Image (cartoon, one colour):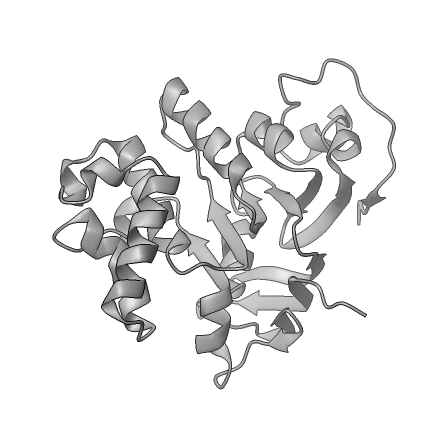
Amino acid sequence: MTQPALRFSEVTHTYPDGTQALRGVSLGVDAGEHVALLGPNGAGKSTLMLHANGVLRATSGSVAVGGVTVTDDTVRAVRARVGLVFQDPDDQLFMTTVYDDVAFGPLNMGLDRAEVDERVHGALHAVGLAELATKAGQHLSFGQRKRAALATVLAMRPEVLVLDEPTSNLDPRARRDMIALLGRLEATLVVATHDMDLAWELCERAVVLDGGRTVADGPRDAVMADEALLAGHGLELPLHVRLGGPVGYNRSDG
């Protein structure tokens, strides 16, 4: 059988201060899927995302990428397959120019300069920033920095993209541009977001986390049309949804 692109199996995570952020989360994401990860603040979304490429390690349970379990021995290879885009682009932009920021990852992969240059230009063209390659990141607008941060990951050519609030703090035009850009990508996407309209437009599947547990998982049209479910977990209906749809997904109120 084909292995999922990304699988979390009974993942728990307890921070050093004793906070239990994840409580047995199991979730599989198939290649090519676009999955929205929804939930209130403190639900465990960001913690789960940081497990996807080994930034955090499970207290118990396991994480696998394409059937390869994340361990000390495999984490470097896993990070080449799973790209993580943080909410704050300044967490990923620290070099002198945008070109250097995007080149940083491929260079650290040991690629030759010609391959690095090809990847950088391809990534910058994909996000519409080719003409700003020589600019310093701090001189870009916030929306441009968001796209530059995405380019730093695209240059690694990951199989799975995991994004934390990709439209947060963007103005309406930049938000629309980001949604359109993400919709054109061919990678498997896992998107943690409070932007319900982004989730509706971009993803065909929705997973709701709360209290470190999965409380719903199913087709977007069912999960995101369930007003009672969403309200019970601090979420609102997307603007596109006016009436509740049929319920046909896995839901746990426990």
